[in-house]
Length: 384
Ligand SMILES: Cc1cc2nc3c(=O)[nH]c(=O)nc-3n(C[C@H](O)[C@H](O)[C@H](O)COP(=O)(O)OP(=O)(O)OC[C@H]3O[C@@H](n4cnc5c(N)ncnc54)[C@H](O)[C@@H]3O)c2cc1C
Image 1 (cartoon, protein in one colour):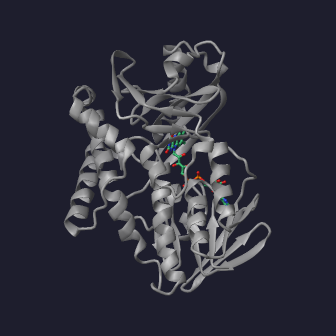
Image 2 (tube, protein in one colour):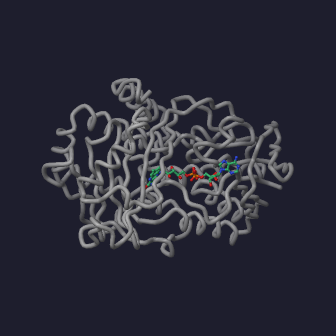
């Protein structure tokens, strides 16, 4: 076997697709049987979709062309719109099955219902112990999300975490307003410490959620109840209510060793401002496939290029997310005032639609790291 991919979420399946396309022998292992769901708003930004090597149209249920942003459950609503689509709304059960199918069509061997128990890392490959036996390969992508085993094998002790809870309000339930939510997503800021509330339109339901700092975990259901009340929804009408942690990488946390790289949530790549992680999953899997591809064809000895490539692709993006988080928490009304200016709305729109420019200069990366450090320090222990 050339490559074992652990986890068939957005990071794993797209890494497997790219590697199989290059001609590698790839196996994807996932402990769950597919289709499976994953707690998630299911919003794929245009930026995220633009990284993918194929279109996801078959599983897009709504196209969001407008973000309605409000502060503190009151006051004026700021509309961020213009220039067409911003976010593709999907359901993770359908999206993830679709992504896994693409990997299979490229030649990957997908084994669902197979749990990885243990990973032995060697300088020239990996050995993975599963419920059903041992598999060896020349390289591995650890894409087993927030609660997987790959990060631990690499020596990652703990990421920093946020937490979110969401549920689906079916069409026809009290409070369901199809005309309001057809192509608009609502974001409620300054209502949950360290996060926000949302309502996302889907095919036959809307997704209602809240997210924030990890210590808000015990109060997440209350936050969810509150956003429901504000919108005339009874929390008991929400279906499939569940919560999950969102991993946010600490600076210096390892993401690669000789023949193994971490991608997506396993690497702690969730955007600290938006809580999105699919763009980061798709981007890291692209870099993972390139790096491992070079090892397989002999142009690189190991995966040591991966951390710097990841920093170049995501470092400035992460820094701007931390800076925005700092401003919205310390001065929410300043942020809202800024959002009302067309120039800032254009910047937000661009951030949702297009991949950020890659930074590879030492100076650019140092500045990004400094902005990230200063914002996290300024936000205090919850953001550390
Ligand atoms: C409530 C909530 C809302 C969110 N909303 C959005 C959103 O709207 N847009 C967005 O971009 N992001 C959102 N996110 C973040 C997004 O869900 C994640 O960043 C994304 O799923 C990361 O993808 P991944 O492939 O890295 O990991 P996952 O999607 O978590 O996939 C990991 C896979 O690994 C498998 N696995 C785990 N352990 C093992 C093991 N030992 N052996 C084998 N397989 C294993 C799991 O079964 C799973 O299928 C949200 C997160 C939460 C919690």
